[in-house]
Length: 385
Length: 211
Image 1 (cartoon, helix red, strand yellow):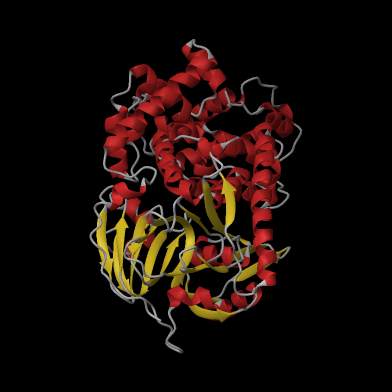
Image 2 (tube, helix red, strand yellow):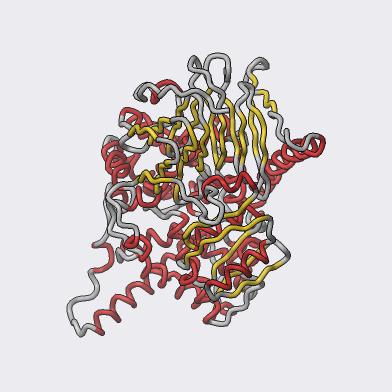
């Protein structure tokens, strides 16, 4: 299936894409997450297709399904219906679906593609420790039309230089695609995930980053953009210089950040703003706007900046919810985390870790709040009270 | 046509053989169809979910006596309908109301536009979407509803509307294209054509590079 040429309506009509929007097929979810990282330039189109589809399906999104599926799983347990494993039960079944087999094949092919790319990047990293990633050339429509994509998988970070000399640190599970003509007629790119940029000054060619929620425009400056599609928030943190941020959405707004400021867009709040859905969490966040500008958070001990700590290989949380921390941990350690309790999702933690194992991190967190964890096969973690 | 109808009977037969994994597969595969069907009867998604779960657990408990069925979705819909009616009746008994119980059936049938109005999240997008949706023909709206809201496969849609699968597919494809073009005029971004949106950006502050 050649998704690269898909139009909006083709995505909406694609069963695998629908399953990704609802979250009711783990294989489809894995496939589309990978596909998105490999095609950061399609992030906005996919986001729009998803909004389209959700409007047509009665707004049954992944969050709704996940909550309902949890009730289903609890009922299964309460009725003593045997299940092989809380994880594999569902996934094993997918492979037996006819469509599932089709998709599994395509997903495997796509993931293989990604693995090959990252393997190539890895091997170059070994040769040259600090200049890890080189652009991967992808030949598109015409032979002369070459574009560059940089990507990282979960548990991996890279630093590299763009053709204009700009230094980039790319966090785990992220990708950057340079738009054709980069450093010739413009300096524009698409980003999915998180990256830190130290931009080479060039007033003739403004440096522009496109993400789903915001575009960031600069002349010469250092800043961090975090735009993971599966995170609730999207943010840009400015270290020095000045950037303009165009917040997209229904009413585009432009704002200018000053050094040590960041702008945070709460995607969920953005959506829920006008609704009467009131989870405990929403009540805590009393805001009238769907975005806030705040200053960067410093760690008191050494005055380093929380938003940038990932570049120094430090894992940092600053009064964050356990559920949000879990998403960070999943990317950081390339693991999957499952909560068996709603309550502990709301626990909040603050902490900094230097090159600790996931086991040590969780143990340290246990000192602050009581919970239990179980590590399965080094890959899956179950959290409960 | 890229559409493939999943062989849902496979899971049904596995369920009859006592494989519990089939239960969670049925739940996932039929989630949208059952949820939105139930939502037309009672506008409470969590209650509908509880009813779906009850139906599935009930099926598990009588798995050895389950019949072979041709259309699993239709079977599940009927079971869900009975279950929800039962719940509503019990609720009313509890409230000691003795009003007539039978008019529940299709009185809550929703119009095509209603499927959009009921969405609470993302209301802004929702409203622009509704405006565009209203420009479609009744036929187009009906098919979008059957495909995406009721989550029917193309075979079932073809039978229900007395058209071919290919025609059903084309009508839906065209309807989505019309929606897309209607929405293009509205002020939200589609695929990023770099210059266009950024035109509204102010001139950047000029600052020398550090270090």
